[in-house]
Image 1 (cartoon, rainbow over the protein chains, first blue to last red):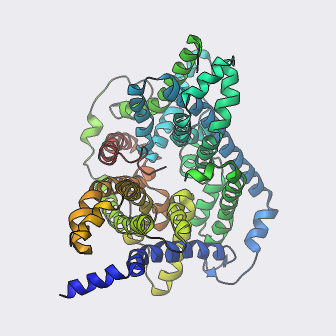
Image 2: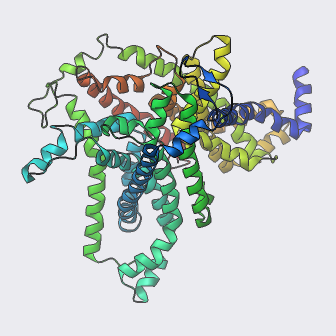
Image 3: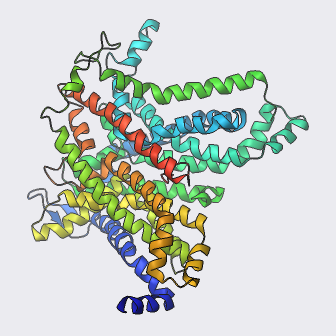
Length: 288
Length: 271
């Protein structure tokens, strides 16, 4: 009987049903998670007592002053953004041919196989993939072994290794949106272009590229922001290289200066939001 | 598009090159796990399973796997409940802030892990320090659940959109109440999406290291943390190779399974 009454009441009150469904998730995401982000933003104005190591909960712009006046942080910021841009360009250059091949050259029955070949490593452990590149770049590793006959030394651990490893990790995030974009592009359009006398090169630059442009941007959002926020890769294959994310991580860990880490974290957040703002007009965000 | 033979061969070889770029490092790790030498001079001089035999020796791997499983199960359970609730609300009701909510779900995975990590770390410290409590395993579960919600949400939402509501309406027209309709109609229809989403959430949690690092208490070590802590120690490197190879194989299976089950999205909701 009781069950029935609840049932009737719920049946009549659509709003109550929605509210019941939403209560927990909203509490978790909007209150706890967004709240945490807000606390972090506020904490960037706090400081740490250098004597006791306790957090001082009073507001000052000391952290930002340090960030803006000490030259080393500017250098690190520019280096991090350069790495993120390089990773994005490398991934774009690798992804376009492979996406083009899968969607326009390969016969449909082979397509899902090759797409699976691209996708499966996306889910292989992130740490294992990074570790794999450590064995590639290490002294006496695969790369130095392969380059030895040519008399070239491998790059070893450093900025090059970091960029290549990041490009490796995020490549599927670039391939998938471009493949999806090309898959939607009707073949008849390309045939029409050929029939009207356009060379493959002209068809590529004036038909394909403009149409997959939003997809490239969508992929670049992943490659760019994931690269900017990563500190594990640079710790594993970067040698002594400093990037924004590992400065943040070191300030939380060894230095124990959470407020400074929070202030530093605003750089990737602001850069990523700025990037989203710039690319918003391309229509890439509508696919999310 | 008319592509010359040369252009097709060029594209094919570029594809082959990129796929090799994707797979060679993984094969190197797998091969190295059978390399009996401690220094991994490449190429291996001989192959042996000596390191595989040492896997269960007390080196912290097993406790780390145990904590990873605990965290994964906890986070998956929370993500299943919250993700399903949001998916139902978004697909079946219209309410204020719906678009904001569907964006908010993506946030924890779209923002770099380090941001989510230190945001939660700051909050945990702000609230736990006054109570003299420390970070522990449950704080990791909270962190992981936050970014796992989205994969469950994506899988269930895709399923609900595809199903439509006519079957549920028919059930209610025939006299079933809300609970009966959910139990006999809706739940069986979304069950496989829940399994797929749950598997992916578990895989995502099992692999995570950044949020883990900032939300784990002292003495808590998940498997990725174990790998990270040990890969710089020359003595432990052979065991790291074995664990890494195991993970490559183990990861492919649940993902492949969830793809087979769900068939709703190609990337399984990670994109």
